[in-house]
Length: 247
Image (cartoon, rainbow, N blue to C red; front, side):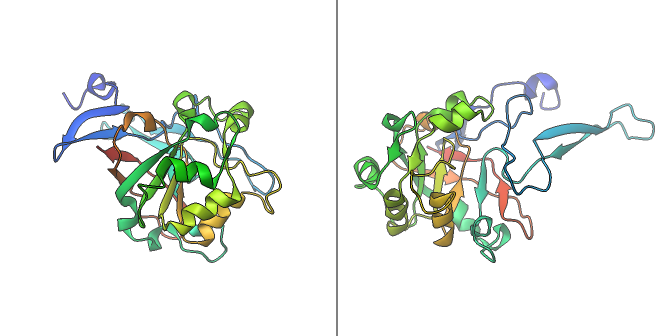
C-alpha cells in the first residue's frame, strides 16, 4: 500500500494521526511549481523559482529501476525559517541554532481583523495574546490569508497586514524565539526607517522568523507544540521546514 501512487495521493493537509495522543496539524504551505512564486527584486544575481525536474526515469538504461528528481529553489521557498544571518551580516546561521528552538510551546495570535492591509500594533498583540505569552514561546500570527494563497501575486502582498515598529518591539520584549506568519511578512509600517524593518529588527535580536504558514485556523488550542525542524545545512541563512502543530 505505501508504495503505490494512490496512497501518496491521499490528502495530507491536516493529518488524522496521533502522536502521544495528540493530533498532528500540518501548517505548511504546499510547494507546487503551479501555484508558488517569489519576487525577484533588485540585488539578485539570478532568478531561481521553485521547480522540479526528472533526472532519471524508472526505465532509464542501467538506472536500477528508480526515478530521481531534482529541485531548483531558494532556501526561502515555501514554509521556511530565517536565521539571523538573513538580515544581519555575520549573524547566526541555520546550523548554529539549537534544535530546541524549533520544537516547543507555541501560541496563535488571532489577527484576522487586520485583513486586508491593516497595521498590527502592540495593542493588538496585547489583546490577542498578552495574557498567554511566555518567554521562550513561538508566536504564530494568524490572518488566514495564506489559506487562499494565490501564488504570491501583488494583490496577495498588498492585502497582507504588517507589524508596526511597536508590535515588533513588543514581541522582542516578551522573549519569543520564533515569529511565524500566514501572510506576506515583507510589508512594513509606512515611514519605517528601513526596508523589511520588522523582520530585520527581529533578526538583530536573535528571533527566528518563519514565513509562509497556513491552516492556523485548524489548530484550535490555546497552547500547543510546534515542530518545524530545518535541514542540517552548513553555512546557510535559511532552510525549508515541514511545520506541524501537535494539538
